[in-house]
Amino acid sequence: MISLESRANKCAFRAECVSPFIVMDVLEKAKEMEARGEQIIHLEIGEPDFDTPQPIKDAAVKAISGGDTHYTHSMGKAELREAVAGFYRRKYGAVISPEQVIITSGTSPGLLLIFSVLLERGDEVILSDPHYACYPNYIRYLEGSPVFVPVAEEDGFKYSPEEVEKIISRKTRAIMVNSPANPTGAVTTAQEYQALARISPYIVSDEVYSGLAYQEGREHSILEFSDRAFVINGFSKIYAMTGWRLGYLIAPPEYIRPMQKLQQNLFICASSFAQEAAIAALEQCDEHVAEMVGIYDQRRRYLLERLKKMGIAPKDEPTGAFYMLANVKAFSKDSYSLAFEILEEARVALSPGIDFGANCEGYLRISYANSLENIKEGMDRLEQFLEKKKSSGVAG
Image (tube, rainbow, N blue to C red; front, side, top):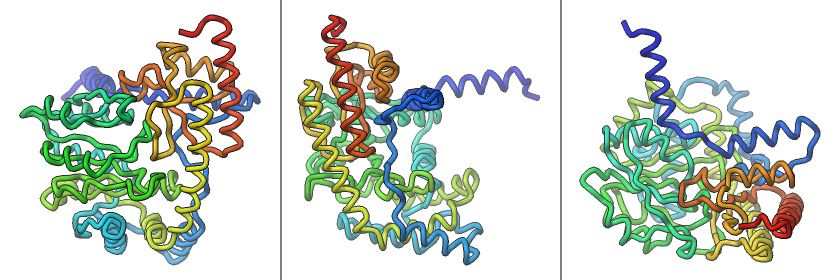
């Protein structure tokens, strides 16, 4: 029998594999300050400020009222998997079978399923640095090894395929791509996808910000260029459905059954009525999405100009997602401390760059998933804070 102490040690080991998600520390501190009556401008969290479009809500209510509150097929409803395949065919010209789609309870379970079937102990996954904070945690939790490739601000924070190829080894199982990207707002081009697909055993492509791109014709999916690809996507960002917890993965056919068995054991299936809502999202909400994207782009352009005025704008214009990195190296080499200093003094919540990798130290991530009015107020406060820091001689 395993002792309680042994169990505790194993639990502690697992916890050590997982780094803290620092942006949540910022959010929780901001909430504490709000509870004391302080007015905080939230530009730290990656959550749309829009309400879920009405057709989606109507479809869920109809499903619940009609008794659609039971288990579904473990891979998800056939109608939704067909709608996902149709979406990729219409948007990207990528031909996939509905049998390659598994509906998940958000994109995080999808990542867990993918890395569970791809990785054995010591296997490597190549990640850009900066990257979404949770990627390395999934890999380490499954006893894999993340291998980081620094990407430069001057290059739009995007991979150089030549540099990636240098570090591919016999242990490399996949390259992780995120486009449009969190935290950088970078959008991967067709040529970049093609180059990565040529050199990688597999590509794991996080496309959850699909649709949030602001240059016509520039957005792509890895499925246009490779069939040795795993795709993560969902409904949280583009349809303002974060609380619905619904996503999906697309995978090579030979990996579907192993992932389905894991899904059956770990999660059983995704929410039945949320799946009905997702069908409505894919089939009825193009106009709603277009309106939201137009508003995001207005905010993006305003934020970029304000950061340029302050001298902290990224060198290459970010054209996707709803994030922008501000280069604050002239003010501090410790983005964690700086973010909390700004929160305490300026009442603006921002994400420390260090949350997204060592190569993101010296940056702050700004989310423009907030109203233009709040973004303007947040930038006014940030500008005043930085001017004060500069005049006090603390900068640098």
